[in-house]
Amino acid sequence: MSEPVISLQQVAKSYRLYDHDFDRIREIVTGKSRHKQLVALEDITFDVQPGEVVGVVGKNGAGKSTLLKILANTMQPSSGSVVIKGRVAALLELGASFHPEMSGHDNIYLNCSIQGLSKAETDAIYADIINFSGISEFIHQPVKTYSTGMFVRLAFSIATHIDPDILIIDEALSVGDGVFARRSFDRIMEFKRSGKTIFFCSHSLYQVEALCDRVLWLERGRIRSAGDPARVVTEYGEFLRMESSMQENLETVQHEDNPQPVKIIPKSEIPRILDVAVTVDGHVAKAHQVKSGRSLLAITVRFHPGENLPLPSLGIAFTGGDGRILSSVGTVNDGLVLRVDNQGIGSATVEFAEFPLLKGNYNIDIYLMCEQGLHIYEAVTQAAELNVEQVGLARGIVNLPHLWNS
View 1 (cartoon, rainbow, N blue to C red):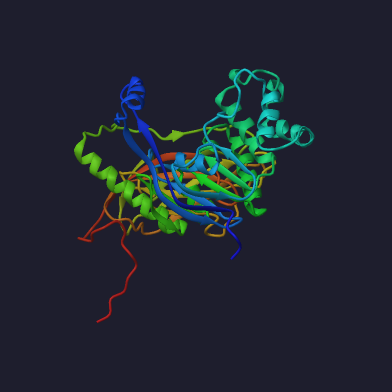
View 2: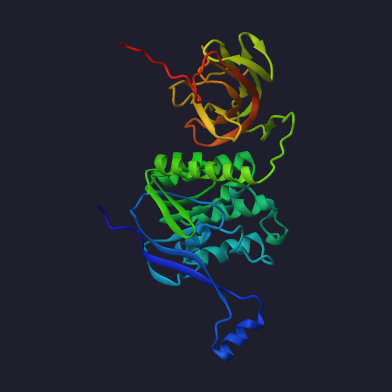
């Protein structure tokens, strides 16, 4: 095994909290403690090998951002050792490294110089940074006038053009339009294929599992679990669902009587869903009565494939009332390549004969994704509601195919 590019040994970070600013002075003068200790990280130890993509998951306040700041060298640990080999580029707080009064042009040179690039090296990549960000007409305006999307475009473009050995991303790709999100996704995949080391922090468990080689789950400043993405993401998802269930028992949860499908329409340059038709035993509707083990469910999705992009893929998920994904299917996983007709419109239908879910209320969510089934272009949640009835006393969620022998 090669030498790690990142090595943390018993790293801890704590903060002093004061009820009043004057308590700091009192503490210095009197020598008596007037602060409370907040432990953000404790006993964090791990190594990262060159080319690894490491995901970080955890609730808000678990210590994820503190860990990433330490890795980015924008914060020092209270104790422990941190060894990082190579140039690090980080996308943490949006625009944190930008000077608001300076133009985008000047901030490019400022950020590149902070990363150790000379003016000549920055000159060589300047045009590529602007072209990728897509904000050339605003590049000489103060960044304080930029929108959130413009901030993330410029920050991401700078971070990925300085040729870092290690890229740290903290939810930065959740901002911006669909076209830029796709380009950013392609850029990250280029980094992964070229053997760069990536730290990826996100609340999107699907993307964490799909992109990462290893996942760290932080809870209250400690590593609660680490290892195989599928295992850690499943453990963390179950933890969130149990916590949510306990919270619902303590609070009154209000639901809309007739929730409407949430549909986000991106720009025309990228793939988009045109319509979804859900039929049960030949009847089209938004809400269905379904007979478990008897009804035929068919889902048809029509889509526009976008412009100058590989044909997209489709994913369909069945969710319970708590939002938990009970089952899913996808064209990538099933080896199906989608097609378009003479008018350039795509369509695909998936059928579920003798629908296997047992009694209960379920929703169908539709996802139009990239050709690899990783990047989500558009989602239609609650595309249809299924009220499943059953005959017999079987318990659980699904009726598994089985055969008795005696």
